[in-house]
Length: 90
Ligand SMILES: [Zn+2]
Image 1 (cartoon, helix red, strand yellow):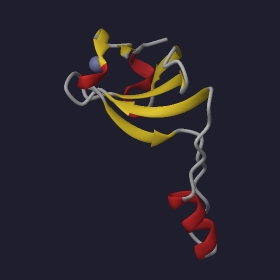
Image 2 (spheres, helix red, strand yellow):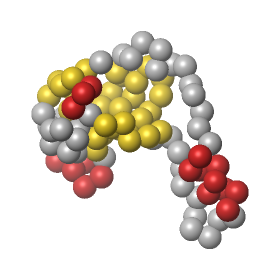
Image 3 (cartoon, protein in one colour):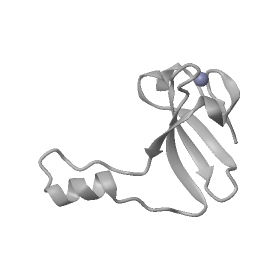
């Protein structure tokens, strides 16, 4: 699999580290423990299009939101997230 980093260009997946499910919404700090347990530990294992966080750990270290098909690994979009999101990208 290859990921096109908006800063560095297309790179092999070995340069990236998976950062988790990008669809999880964190509950408010005062939410019940059950809500936090579900947000932290409960995960879907979807087949098809899925949003994920990846970090270009062995490159520019930027965090990316990647829309990837979990069955084919086809990547539909890559976008910067966090502080670097305003620096460019797709
Ligand atoms: Zn990069």
